[in-house]
Length: 286
Image (cartoon, rainbow, N blue to C red; front, side, top):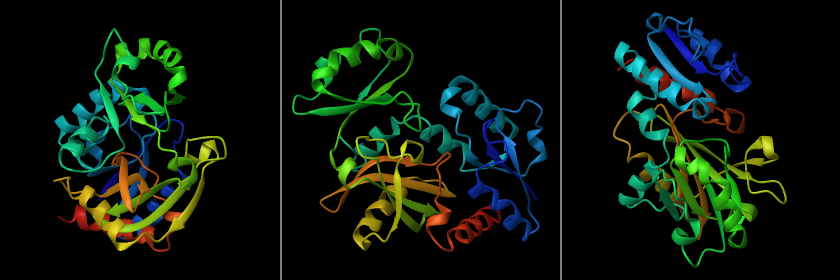
């Protein structure tokens, strides 16, 4: 069997963590290799499966990525996660759907494309601080946190973006700076491990490239069950899902469910790489 581990141009050989998948899969007579998703020279029908791993530039190439997904769907090549999941997950308005299903999300205003952005008119009066970002984004792309006193400046800054992209306005929760964000990682819809991520002092972004500090944690059974409920809203098979949220009063307030290209933090949980391999084997044998 031949599997493409999908990546991007700036990570042609995958991240060091995901490179470990290649020799591990070889033990099961599976030939896996890193393949750049938008490389025009790739013959996709050469592969039995495509596994999304480090496609970390898809949100910068929105139109191209959407066209490529259509091509893969047309060719009938199997992917993990499934194309249907990728199509749903790439646009963060899926959070609205989850909220309608009873999942508690960070308080969010969903903003359709508009030529007349007016944040003053739509922001809830009781919010003291907010975060704004495109719905098609990742890694703090075009993301700003702001006090309401700066809303005029932010409105001006996002006027052009609002014409081209749907936006999300979220209430800034101060707990992100004190307690951080918690990621619950699931393989084949089974809980594997969890990691807490705190931002650097004076920042709100938890990504390691911005100085975020990561720690392996053992969440309560109740919190794991809450994350499980979120994962179980997906009808399809899920090779992986990462549930990211802020925990307030022992309740997850969901920030996002990463099903496209998240870091799975293998190095923070012994045995997690093998659990991931086992999940691949389970799903490709169906």
